Image (cartoon, rainbow, N blue to C red; front, side, top):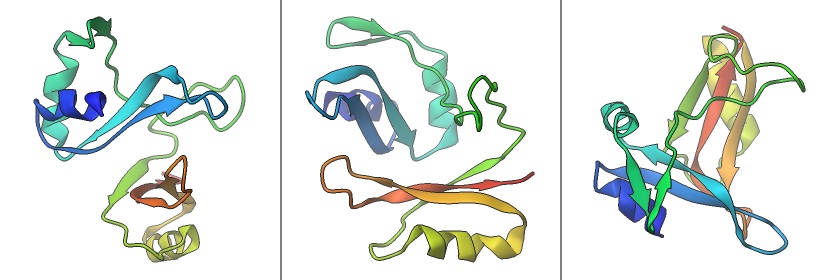
Length: 128
């Protein structure tokens, strides 16, 4: 996948995904990249990028707002990236594993668009 290959030139990429229309499989014009190291992201954000002959806009991903019209604020529900999640682990397992550390709001894994299998990573959102 050209997105992952391109960004891998800046540092190790854990995952890269182009968002596609579920009916046509055509690119929706955006995607996500998860880097192995946070400093790689900081470096990438300070550069201009051209992919497949087109200039692309690179931004830090922000969590979705909880309610329509609400602005996303990373300080409202701090979100933790969880990598290396083994197969067979459920969202509830992740929720329960992190519950002892304080108010977990949600826990979920990212799923493959086609197989619906876990992609080996997810997120845990906390109250504060």
